Amino acid sequence: MNSPVSRGASPVVALVAASGASWETAVLEVLDTAAGVVVLKRCVDLDDLLASAASGQADAAVVGIDAHGLDAAALDLLARHGVVVVAVVPEHIADERARERGARVGLRHLVPESGLASLPEILGSARSEGGRGASRPPESAKHPSGDEAEIPSTTPSSRYRPGRVVVVWGPAGAPGRTTVAAGLAAAVADRDRIATLVDADPWGGAVAQQLGILDEVSGLLAATRLVTRGNLGEGLDSVQRSLNPTLRVVTGLPRAERWSEVRAGVLEQLLEATRARGEVVVDTGFCLEDDASSGVGVRSSRNGLTLEALGTADDLVVVGTADPVGLARLARGLVDVAGLVRPGTAVHVVVNRMRSTLGWSQQEVEQMVRGFTRVESLTFVPDDRSAVDRALVTGRSVVEQPDAPCARALGDLVDVLVGAPSGPGRGGATVRRRRAGRARRR
Image 1: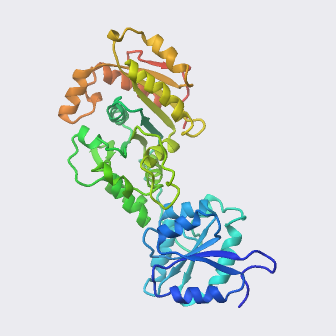
Image 2 (image 1 turned 120 degrees about the vertical axis):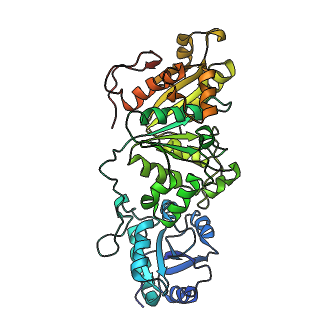
Image 3 (image 1 turned 90 degrees about the vertical axis):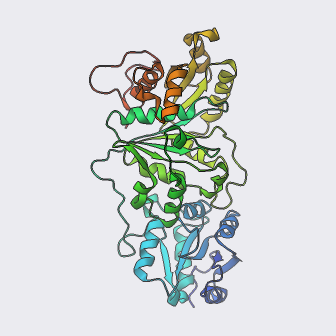
């Protein structure tokens, strides 16, 4: 048998995760007798494979194309550790179905069960394209092309207009994150632009309850299942609830303890798919702590949803309350969150429940906020408890009360985020911008 690597080159270090498949023995026999290939470990399942890959010792992994949990997120995690994947196609899976499955999740190397003799050569060529010490293939090369497979098109309809991802975050203490997020999404939708509100709070999101959505199916968990199967683009509509022709909602976790069911990378893929259709507003959790074990396996850490959202944001809206405790938490939060967003992400601050009885002016609060970080805009939302209560009782967003002071304030913030609507301008100067007339980024 020909060696898959040239003489003098380091051997291909491989992991095998067959989970007891019929082809496992044949694969091990082929690799054990091949020159230039070393089997590092027989993994119990995909999670074991991912944990082993994290050691950085492997070049390639041999798995079944029907392995449970083998999705785009798992492949991306393996690629980060320099491991390329070769998928074995069992005899009971038709070639066409295998190619379709490979294209959907991003598998580049497939070998039929009847052709396992060629596996060492395939491993060698795969390692040369991307493994430890080899240059990684570009993003566009993660999917098969040409005769290898047909990639399903996820190009949105011409009626869709790509938008931005606006992430709403705030520290602990109920600063009004969900109320602000729902209001922003509804205000965008009121301008005849498609807006999707995504509940990504791993500590118990309240978007569905706040908007009166009685649905037993979690949109976020449904998206997780679609990502696992590799057909999120085709099934995106099924994870959203349409509240009106332009406002859609992806509901969050039905119970906080189900956060572990959302795989790492799912939210990022969901946001990329929804932003291709319009503006996206994401409601997140309060906690920014990362679990040290989050890099092992394909499961996210408890706060992985929040961290993924921050890393995807085009605009970050940080919400805090105007009382002494709330402002102190806001100040610390601005410092903490600054290192978790991409360079160039615009930061907007919302000071919620602003009231004269606190004893300080908007100018004094603004001076404090701008002393901690550079912000694109600063919005003061008045303490409009009656409007918020009416919205909660009726299951609507506060912007559906256009004369309410808090609704006007959020509308002014939307002017900053997506541009002012055509026609007569809005009144209330509740938003202080870093510079006037900022051109919208697209």
